[in-house]
Length: 358
Image (cartoon, rainbow, N blue to C red; front, side, top):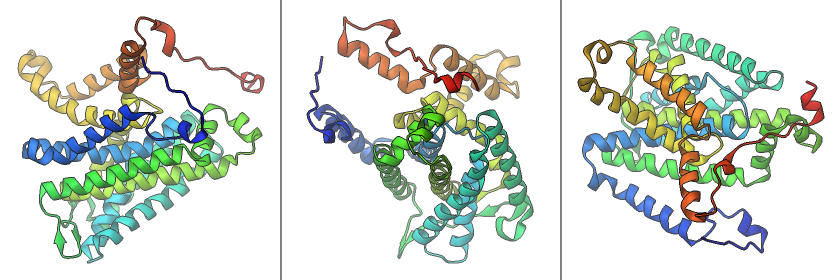
């Protein structure tokens, strides 16, 4: 059992709480950098997708998990970043500038979408973001001069100066560095006054407003940062698959992204990457298990959607804290054994009187 005595405020906001954190996270980073020599080409490609979806998941986690804003149209931001990157790289804009523009344009679109969040929330905000997703998907299909329409658009390989990132290993390292930078950026944001304002809005908007937090400003900022990270992920996604079409950014993609953060664990940075691993690994597991299922089930067209739905229901009913919540319970059990109590992680919400009367 480890006891940590905090005597300074810097200890409370430190990214690594103790030496064990520094050791294990350092070991994880070393393993990720060594992955190209330890994994097959196919496995490395899947790891690259995990990093890309992890970046997108960080943005959605900030929006849904830490600010409490519901979005069912996040694939639209992914598509804006992807098509912006493809269009700018296609006309000869350097890759770093195109990447920054993809993030900036996605953030600007996020600000526009975030305006309804000032007046609606919950299910109604989800409906408005879903409507935005439908509009953007239609724009992708109709704006043929930029997106190529339903015929699709090819994406050039990224290049930094004279260095062409056309191999899987080089692109993996690029995604890994950007994922680490994005993760550190989100962690530092969450321990800043802005991040604490996001969490306060999630817990109670009335209490946050009474403490002087400007709801409109911080909600819009959360949408902008979330959309910028989705745009960054979309730009990398475009270079990874090398071909874009409007049906890649439909409502199903938005639901997959939301499923990713819910199963990974809402309200945790770890949950974004655990959910990304789930999102990439689950289709592989379903395809591998088809040979062992009866033909009427294994060849059913809606098998993937049915499995996703059952997994989501199981997590909502039995593990609402997601994969990261399950890991916390296992770690806590072994850390404080034999003093672990079953109801230790039971969530209780306290309501203000004004909340109860609404």
